[in-house]
Image (cartoon, rainbow, N blue to C red):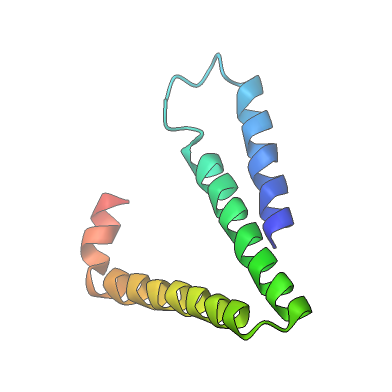
Length: 93
């Protein structure tokens, strides 16, 4: 998944660079930058999980579980807050 997102982020950055003269918005590359950062974080988390599994390390697997749980809690929180404030989100977007 991280490799796929990395390809998408790189493709978007390369596409926007060819239209740089037409786009004066400074925030045009913000989504691609966020995708690249998410890719890096996913790669590191996946690497921790793979190394912990390969070494059969209880501490590493516990760390991987904690990271995945934190991400899951953040996703559920974002969903609940988006649902509660859906009218404000609609007007802002």
